[in-house]
Length: 83
Image (cartoon, rainbow, N blue to C red):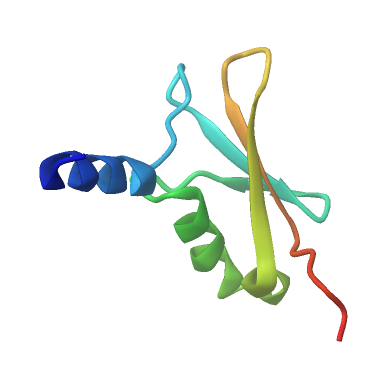
């Protein structure tokens, strides 16, 4: 794989996921959070973590496409080994 191909793959991996209808929504802990345009799902989580501390250690799952084409991402607890 050439260097230019590697750069393209890396750039695409960090690009925000966009729904077919252009809408995304984030849910978690019984709440729904509006999309922040131009941000990756993890960047959206970090922005909301300022006001919702439980998001600081949350994972992002999804997207799941709703019937209207909106992509839904879910914030949930990170699963890992207990110490």
